[in-house]
Length: 92
Image 1: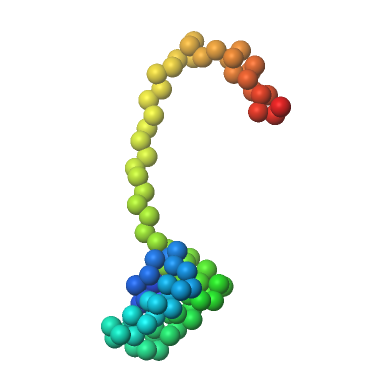
Image 2: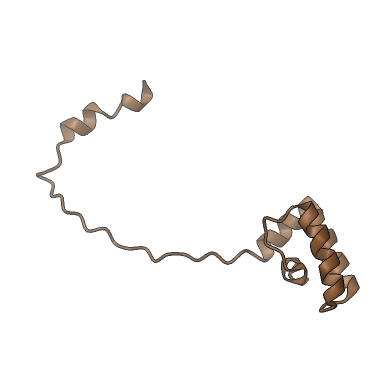
């Protein structure tokens, strides 16, 4: 199974109209065989097969490095009375 998004040169949030348009452009480019292009378009138009393709070929997400948080508070500076008084405000 080849990546249908790469074959059709699409992003994962493409809608039906964009998939059909990309299929026509891919046929004109002739980088892939017509059968591969047709299978890729059919796969992306079927919701179940598209979900499978999304899991198999995830979009590259640039993750930021997790930075450590330096706590400037000490245990003496935390006023627990204020925390306890406001704890149930969200339930009102």
